[in-house]
Length: 424
Image 1 (tube, one colour):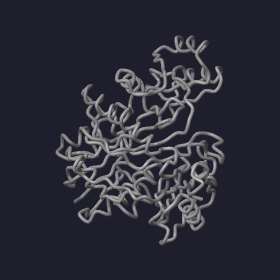
Image 2 (cartoon, one colour; image 1 turned 90 degrees about the vertical axis):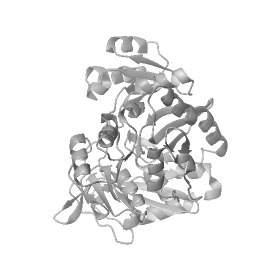
Image 3 (cartoon, helix red, strand yellow; image 1 turned 120 degrees about the vertical axis):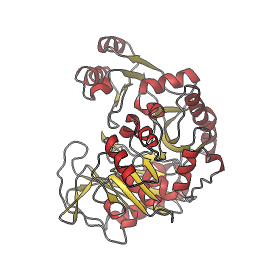
């Protein structure tokens, strides 16, 4: 089989490496991929949002199956366009990707069907939003309705911050049309959990849970980033919590989407907060999370391509989805200065024995050498029987990788270890 994987980050690299484990896969094209992905797939310089270009390439190369991973092409209808051209895909159609593409849609869906989430108000007028915030409970969260590269949710600890957030999104138009509407919602407290799940629109098969580390600095300090590392499984996500989420959140969400005519097939990501009042949805994503994918897929024992095809074909109930009982840790090696400004172009050296554990996110090939080209450069993942060993192995691997101007957190997984002292 010849496959295409749409996207260019560490998430896509993790997906490609897992797909290559299937003996029927002859070749994978990455559109556009990156310099590191080029070691495992043929990179083609077609943007992930160039839907016409993607379809043209897929038809010309007689692609057997496509995996669309980033949010932008999904929301733009990449799966729909490929399907129309006769190319089967993993990923939701445009009408289902709206669950991430519009915060207003997803919040209203949860409210209508009684799915636990934060209380909220929707505004399409900056003046009314600012007036509301004069007396609204603080802290609060202000969210742009549309996609904003994962940066459209602003946690506001003071009233002044909340007012500034509305101005940033709706007046200054920092996120463009994504800020035409905003959601102002209740500030929730509790441990956060990410649960990626496979679904064919009928059944839900959750993947192993994970814990992301969004802040740039140790001790969860500094600016929010795309993720500085992650661990799996998340110790706060117990069997009891998993059962509650399946009954009150996962299945009701799939059912609600079906009833509204937005049947979802693919990977549905549940961003959860375990509040004193039970698990609540912070956000939905219509695709694999990044860097969560980099700890979840290494723990998957079943064949990824078989599962993806089952999601496409509606046969997921008959398909095995099994994960190992071990743990995984991913440490992100970034460029110093990320997520604000950083220098690029530094040569990266990755020893051959370490490469299988590395998922490259921000790198390019220059004169045959791999050089840094992004803020998050690569993720280094290790698996082990327990979390303490996985963390130790992951950090040990980072010591063998070198590029100038590198930065990483030194405490990935520490909070999770504190919750599970028996793993130490």
